[in-house]
Amino acid sequence: MPDLSLNKTHDESRQGEAFAPSATDSSNHRRRFYIESYGCQMNFSDSEIVASILNKEGFGATGNYEEADLVLLNTCSIREKAEQTIRKRLTEFKKIKEKKPGMLVGVLGCMAERLKSKFLEEEQLVDIVVGPDAYRSLPALVEEAGTGQKAVNVLLSRDETYADISPIRLDSNGVTAFVSIMRGCNNMCSFCVVPFTRGRERSRDASSIVKECYELFNNGFREVTLLGQNVDSYYFIDEANDDIVTFAKLLERVALISPLLRVRFSTSHPKDITDEVLHTMAKHENICRYIHLPVQSGSTRILQLMNRTYTREWYKAKVDRIREIIPGCGISSDVIAGFCTETEDDHRDTLNIMQYSRYDMSYMFVYSERPGTLAQRRYIDDVPAETKKSRLTEIVKLQNRLSLESNRTDVGKIFKVLIEGDSKRSSQDWMGRTSQNKVVVFPKKNLNHKKGDYVMVEVNDCTQATSLGELEE
Image (cartoon, rainbow, N blue to C red; front, side):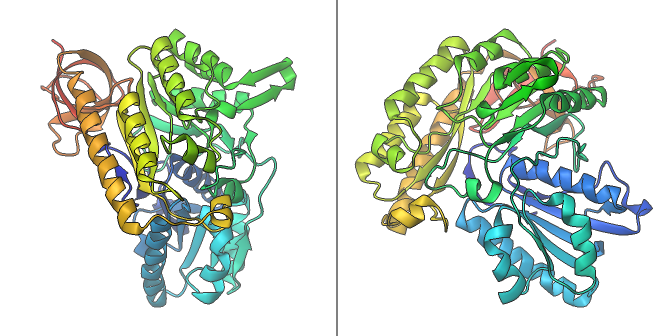
């Protein structure tokens, strides 16, 4: 299974994987597709949209790429290592294609527009290239590629949200699901390619989001994660009801579907998460007490170069506000080591803000210059690779300690846990999550619990990544 090898402190995190069929039965279809998704949760959600589009055209999903007629890689362009991983994977598929000439290979998502010429012409690794806003055209592109033509559509859209498409839940545990609420990003962080690969922000029709979440609940799902590059910017004008739907209002509408439906969201830009959102979270028990709040750097000078539009003091005040309104709220982050001109003092500021914020977990990277970004055009990537690596090592070491400290504070406490399935290590244990997004493993004890049940678990031990507990008698 592919992995982007992101440094993280969350052992159940999904970073890159092949989807296996669940909602479709490939044996009933003439043609089969196989899809691997890399990077962020948005890409996993997009892969489910693609599956729905293909399913309507007679394709069925398969978990074995060697039997597939169509192999797709849904790509991430955030880090250079992700591109290296995908290029290596495409080379492997090219070898299989030589033995199976009828098989088509396509690249979807963020890498599509930027590397289309390399993939199609120079390296000749793929037959189809499709950007994030062009998935509806995929069936036609497959037919075009089937005639021997190279098929491309990487046009961005000002209004595409795929609101009318019901995603097929590939490789689903039947308990948790992603629901995309918006696409694109307007923030223009200097290190980020997303505004160029996914376009400008546009919010999906609020009623279609609530409808999708309601249907998921009726089909047995007990947790939805509302997704967007910056969910706090969600803004929909509901002309039918003469209403403006903010993210806080949308959160409440989804939470009111049922108290048995947990609601999460990702990702929040620190500058946009409002008190209205925080008070809505505090008001509804089924909105999870967990916020992913990327800091990127603890240095105000570096934050300005990154165009993050906040200072270290402002960020710390936002953390304080979260903890004031939602006591016990879990907070996680993204951290970049070695951005352009970063000094040792800047690095120390990052370590300091991590300690201040007491993150439960973080996604941690060395800075990777992305072609076409403002940072690539304006700044020099002047921090030596070895310095980046050593700083990242310090960041990871600190986060490991913070994660362990956070989990230790839970020992002796009782938490409401949603069972997601068997533990990875033993079918005799359940794995679930707390509202704070912490993984808890506990013995089944031959009781009649099942996936999707809520149970009370007392935590009695922990590692830096997992809490260990016992069902409350």
